[in-house]
Length: 100
Image (cartoon, rainbow, N blue to C red):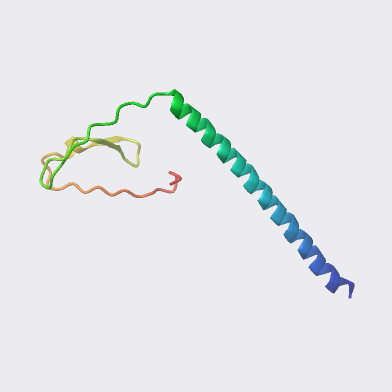
């Protein structure tokens, strides 16, 4: 009889302690996020923004401007490296180590 009464009591205590830990973590992350947002807002006002890149108005059939990307081995790959080849296809995907 004692075991049947004791088991639900222990489970209830564990559930409540787990819920209180989650609430504390959420409150901490919320306060950290609001502090970070106010800090970044202050930094945005203090530092001037660099000029943005000029807009290019490309049409279908126009040559793409040269650009540089990093491959999976960390090397740089330029579009101009593939000039004169038949076709170039770009595939973007998330790798396990990128965190995205």
